[in-house]
Structures are given as C-alpha cells and as structure tokens.
Length: 316
Image (cartoon, rainbow, N blue to C red; front, side, top):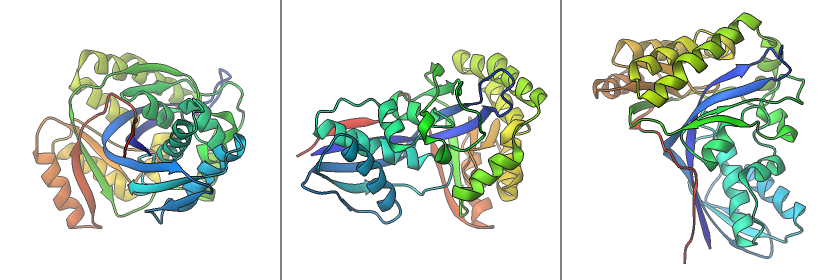
C-alpha cells in the first residue's frame, strides 16, 4: 500500500492577465505545512474510493484519467485526511496529484507531477500548486506562451503548468491562517470573472512585476520580514488580486483587520476565502479567532511554510 501526504499552498497572486509580451498567467505562491491531504492506495481490480464525500468525484476523475492512459484496471483509494475544497488552499490540485502519484508508484509508471497535472487537467493557469506539491517553498511561475484565453485552471487543463522561474526556501515566519465560513469562486462563476476582468491594464501588471522582482523576492532571500509584508500588502491593491478581493468584501475587511492587529503583511489566497497574515507575535491569532467568532465563524491556525513537497511512502 502507498501513502501520499501533500502540503497545501497559498496563491499570493496571478502576475500577467494582459499578455502584451506574449505570455499570460504566471503566479506567486507559498507552500504550507498545514492543512494537508493524506491518501492511502493499493492495487485493485477496479476503481473504488472510500473515506470522503467532498472529493469522491474528483478522485475518481483523476484516477480514471491515469488508469485509462496506461490501460490499468483499477486502484482502491482511501482518503484519510482532507481539507475543504474551494477555499483558496489548492486542494483540487493536491488531490489529483496525490492520486496520480499513488497509481504511478503502485504500477511503476515513474510519472512526474507535471505529467500527472497534464493528465488530470491541473495547472493550466497557475503552476504554483503543482510546484508546491513537487518542491515546496516560495515559488514563482512564468506563465504560458501558447495560451491566448484568460481562463482559470479548471478550464485550461490542456496547457499544464508553466515553468518555475524562482524557488526559494521560505523563512521560519509565523503565518496566521484564517478560513472563514465562506467559499471562493469556482466552476462557471470563476470562468465568468476571468472573462469579465481580463485583459488587465498593462501598467498594473508592470507595477506588480516590479514589486515581485525588486521587493518580494529579495525579501525572501534576505529574510526581511518588513519588506516582505509590505510587498504582500501592495499586491492586494493591484491586478487580478484586487479584483478577487472586491468579490469577497468580508475577506477584504479581514485582511485590513489583520494588518491593524499585528500582521506585518496580510492578503487573501486565490479567490479566498482563506486570508493569511505574516506576523512575529501571538496576538494576531487570538484577535482573528475573536473576529471570526463574533462574525461568520470559521477556523484559525498559526502555521509555517513547508520547504519540501509531498511525502510518499509504502505502508503495511
């Protein structure tokens, strides 16, 4: 039996939804040590899924894509640990890659995460989730040269992930992770947002690139938490991230609340509702717990970056 344990990820921002240079998408993200997906898998005569309700169809879809491609009869997948779908932590990609990896290990297929992503239709807009699964750490991907339409990964699977152009270990900074009782955009709504908001003004893309290259990346390398926090705050006001926040007013207020209560930098991951704050103290965690308890409810936890990817092992 094979066990696969994945990290989760923050999607800090998409980079270029203008395309003036012939590339679109690209993204910046950070791998987290919590929450995680854990599956067990073993060979079987047919495909079966146990231990989950929310991800059952996604698991079957990913497994079927790999099984069909390599003419394999079946696999038994047991979801041991999961976290919610459509909250901004990349569970869909992590589940698909975990399932593909398990099948690859069981049947000696030697498939890379990129190959699995293409087979299962993941990473077609942002490659951050695939790279988080494979490498961990702080990540920047360079987008797509052969893609013309501005669409989310759910509608861009044939392209696969773009190239990772920067990857660094992330400092041991505390990250307060808040998951309000909301859901982010997905499926048709997500596609409609991309179509309505894109292409974005070139000047916003250029300013965002300037912040990423000359402030955010150096701050990670130099362990400069003040500069990193400032860059995260600036990103929330630009490009597609600004549009995502406008669709989640509660999350926008929570981002501001975090900054006022101990976060050096705070932002929303993907379409939300996950909001994160980079901090050096413990007061932020308690403040956010109270904020959610007094409003719409949710979960809060202090986490850290994970500078390694998914973990695969044989178990009895």
